[in-house]
Image 1 (cartoon, rainbow, N blue to C red):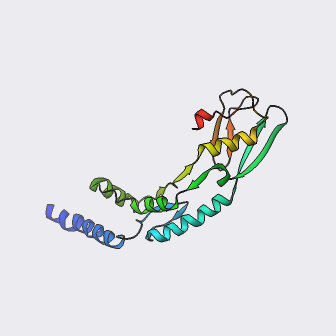
Image 2: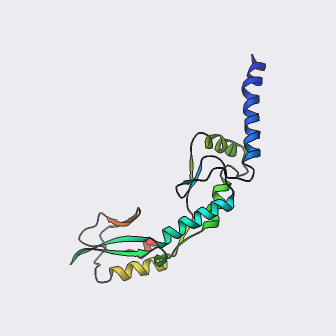
Image 3: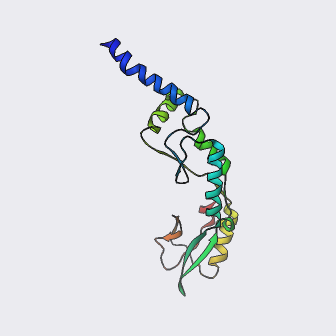
Length: 177
């Protein structure tokens, strides 16, 4: 029975692993997603092209800020990502997609490669935020609208929002840095 298990269970799994390693040797593993797109089985250069295109769309899109002023109510201000000091590192993002399942740790890589056939893995976009530029822009759009801070939190989910604001808000530069 042990020989049966080795012959009909273990051997096919090893062969499947070897075939997958050969097929994906210079390609992104199956089940890897970057910027919302499945990039399974394509080269790092092709992933880079996808990330660059999606970056251009993101960087060209407006991020909407709602300013809750103590006097004058709510107003909306749209800013470009680049105006806020946000830069996407496309090369690092593409490299991270290719590197999934290739860390050099045999146990971790085996787990990642097996799970990539069952579940998808989302690779996060690598972005750098220059908080000095970000803070300056926030100061510019809120000048005259701020008052003493009262434990407000800025949340970014496709648009920046102030959560739990109490009759106005002020950006705390120390917390942003």
